Image (cartoon, rainbow, N blue to C red; front, side):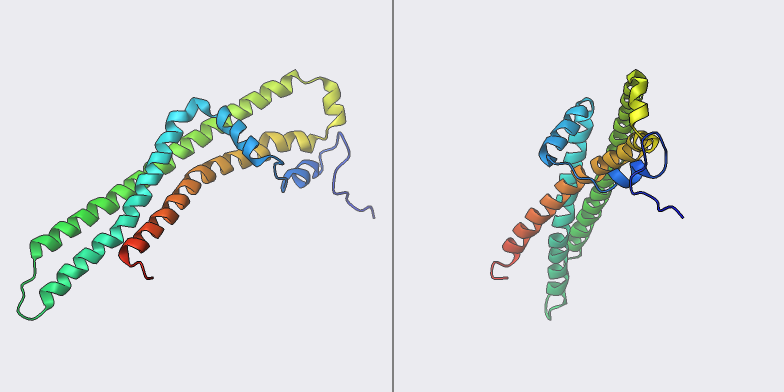
Length: 193
């Protein structure tokens, strides 16, 4: 019984493409991202909208617990003997919290919708460009390259790029804002901690 090779022979389908490209990392990550963002320059306005939505949504989520703390203090002050509860203040804070969390949710939805639109359009543009390139390649290229490699570039690699674009940009910005904002909120709440 013949053992299966890790890389298929040229001109044969097999598992050549998927096995070879699944874990490859770019040698120049910054350069790769620059090229990808330059390729997406048509959608710069949408990407900026995504970044703004990510920043504002994360900031609203960070401010929420501080407002909740204010409401808890107002309720605690009203429970104390000989004092009256300031219902108007509690209602105003609760209304502010509702607007803040609703705004954060809406901005997050806009961010996801915009980023998925950019991702789908970029992957469609990439597939079109790859199709044009494949149609211009000489027949000798297909004699030297396995069918799996060609199919992998058209399907798996474009999907990987699209997934990276979708998750990385907004996720990175949200994480950085969340980290910086949490640090600031911790310092302003209690410096000793």
